[in-house]
Amino acid sequence: MMSAGFLRQWLKTPAMVGAILPSSRHLAKAMARHAGGAQALVELGAGTGTITAELVRQYPAVPLILFEQSPALAARLQERFPDAEIIAECFHERTERLAQLPERAVFVSSLPFRSLPAAVAIPTIQALQRLLIASPHRRMIQFTYQPRAPFRAPVGLSWRRYVTVWRNAPPAGVWELCMPVSRSRYGLPPARAA
Ligand SMILES: C[S@@+](CC[C@H](N)C(=O)[O-])C[C@H]1O[C@@H](n2cnc3c(N)ncnc32)[C@H](O)[C@@H]1O
Image 1 (spheres, rainbow, N blue to C red):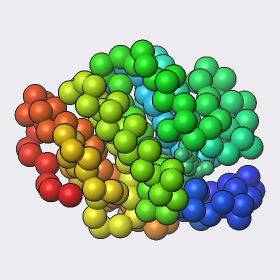
Image 2 (tube, helix red, strand yellow; image 1 turned 30 degrees about the vertical axis):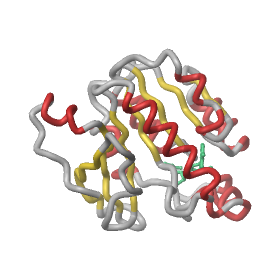
Image 3 (spheres, protein in one colour; image 1 turned 180 degrees about the vertical axis):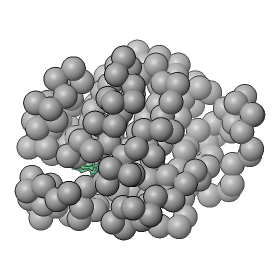
Image 4 (tube, helix red, strand yellow; image 1 turned 90 degrees about the vertical axis):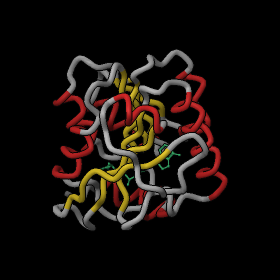
């Protein structure tokens, strides 16, 4: 559902928001379902909190850190999710907060990598590469509206496509980024090249 705050943010910084509508409940459920087994959850670009609400519903005991660069949207997230830690800045500028993350941390991202300015996208991908390579148990769940991977997999990581959620505007693919060794460890088939 459209929220006035989301629309305002889209009008102000369309490249940072990416979508014109928040994620649907169906996409939120699919994203959260694939984040199972986390000892900590880190959501990137939490926006209106549609995916956050599903993460809290499915994993009420797992610590949750939310990054949302829009101060207005972050303030609403803080009201709605008082138990989560909210960081109202760009993810790549505050990764020092994640120095003590547990091995089985799962990143859940709505960041619009295809439209983000390069000055944001490049250091964000580099920070994710460093954080994911720190443990073979770490993963990132990301959606994209395109039929291909959200961005080229950084060295040492690979993408796997899970599912397409048709009940979202536009339909979105749910993908996972992690070290290839994680897949054999969990008995998953090899990732497709991206
Ligand atoms: C596609 S929208 C949000 C989708 C969200 N699932 C929802 O339903 O509202 C992407 C969000 O990422 C935020 N964002 C973009 N770049 C960011 C960054 N580098 N760090 C943190 N948040 C960012 C935007 O402000 C926006 O709220």
